[in-house]
Length: 252
Image (cartoon, rainbow, N blue to C red; front, side, top):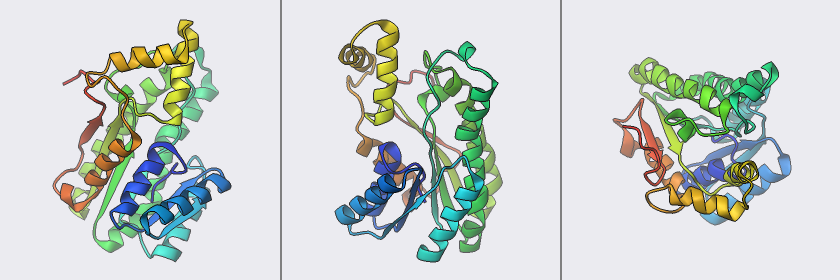
């Protein structure tokens, strides 16, 4: 099960898993886009791919997606928690509603999805959970106040659940994207360009220049790292954080 998978990082991961032979259940909020994404992945990989319409801020929607997955695929071995990001802006600019919405989007969506899916993994005797976050869990990002404050809670959730689930043979890890060329990154670059009074292209050049590898990452590069962490090749890795960032994160 891969959430927010009609485009961007979620889509890339779903396609990578399908290419490795997994049966994949994807979800996103818009029926047309998620159905088209599932059809495209199935055509490209030959894998069985099903889609559901689900807003991960709704526990009822998550439960319906889970039930549809069980009915068609029989159970869940792998879960990728993912969602869109909160609005850009300084931390001091948001009201209570924005903070609550960001918490629902980033933290409670993961908590609820894992809680719903956990019984299937327990029944099957093992599982692998991967939570997508942001480089803001390592370094605060200018003009992303909501993400800077709330996303580190997901990192703490990874460590907590890794300890809780290890005896049940369920691994929990975190994958941190740097500047990966997705629709979300275009939105953030555009917001930063407007704030700095420069063009989008100039903003991208500045951002790429700050990355040791000198470029943005491709979604497929990120997805291959996800497929590794979710697979049996990473069978002794849990509670870990893997950065896919071209060396941009400088913290130890």
